[in-house]
Length: 411
Image 1 (cartoon, rainbow, N blue to C red):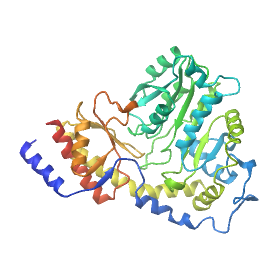
Image 2: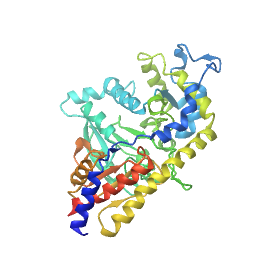
Image 3: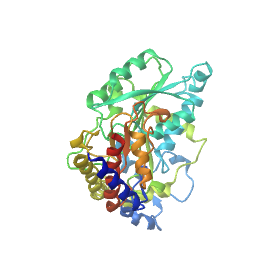
Image 4: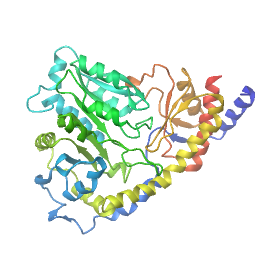
């Protein structure tokens, strides 16, 4: 690298006064526009299987039958194993942990909060780099987080097994099993089976299975994820997993449908406990999604249209990294088959500097350390790149700034 030329190019980029935001994996206006026809729905067609969706109906607390039928293939589950909520699956995850803290995981187990009062905090296993919002939930609820390294097969199962079988305070694990946030890796069949068969010292251990990107494929050879609920049933532990998904990155992030799935027994208990909290989630919005997407084929067609917008953006990111940084050995990354992110591992000690250089040149990235519990990346090397939000022409400029920033940070 010619230092003088590199610094001159950086100053030129700074002088452009760019204001580009790549800080979160938000759908861009180009993706959201694909769902614009939903804004006129459901119109006067507000009935669903004889149900007036405008009114209260506590009998369908867990979601419209039509909406369940539409979304069941996303997680590979039956209607009796599903609960539909409002726009945020993150809210459903938070509420699920709070219920465990208050009531316990079932009617026989002690509440997790009572364990905390015993002098030792409960713990969650957290794959790293991972999803910062999962970590935020744990911090907010006083749950200690233990780092689990990611691997080409998803996560380091040896580490998971060792911690889970020896520590009763380990109550759960976070997983983004398909197109993981941020690595883009999908868990192997062996990893899924080992999680389903996991021997844990805590009988009330639970797997939080966040399939946020289950249908967000970027090519014609998508990753395939083994169904963990089926594997838990085979292992004789159907209650062990809570699965989550949503339409937040399918239709409108601010007006989507959240999806939860678990064993029939778990679902019945959750529904019972939900009855004190709500008479039901937004049925009109569930109906709106059914009318817009129609069926599973319609959902897949919609996702193909989204792919047409996202794939060129991922190409811009990956081509820039390959062209500018790969020949210099200035980082490692995985080329994902889907999802919303590219996880960039620079040389140790360069992430914070790279992000600051980019910010000074008008490109906002996710904060360094965000993909680790407590914001602490011990090697200061991981940067989550989120290509989805900027228009394509802005993304090209942002990646030039990023690559120049990485080079400067390594000098």
